[in-house]
Length: 234
Image 1: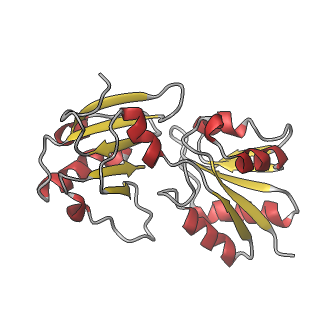
Image 2: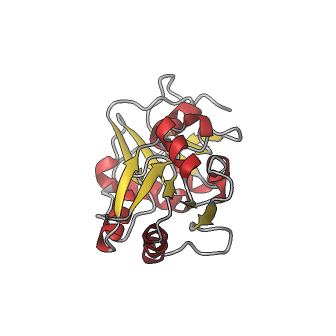
């Protein structure tokens, strides 16, 4: 029988936003592999005694590379343990879930995927800035194996853009967008911890994104606001 792991979307971090299936899988898990301690309230739903491993960047400690994560998951699965790989938001929305599935398949490990609520929907809600139509979701921290993000094609003042995992590149992304014609006074909001008890929102414009930094996890919402101003929060 092929060893299998569960790739589970943790949602934006509030345990109440988990799917019932995700909560059940955590309660049955022998091993939970998560990216950051910010997911601790969700990880806490794992059964008592479950092994917990954080593989994302923590302070000055670098994140595990993709091969090391896949090796860890494969080893635990081959040992007959019930493994949950917990990804922020939805595993396939700017979370590199597809790459992890491919890495595990190379090691003979199958994946079952449980979707989660993405910050792509939670962040605009937290900012009080409903995403307009059309809306594009982009990853600011591009996986080197993925195609580059065509920022010049996303500079549409009539559309909404949600940028996930781009905290370190906000200024560079804003520069690419304005160089392609997006007005520098286009409303923008930076959202920390969307849908969590410590959610924080800073409203600004595209020109101000480089100077607007919040702790991770943070998402950026760019686009027209119904009232013609950036966001609904002070």
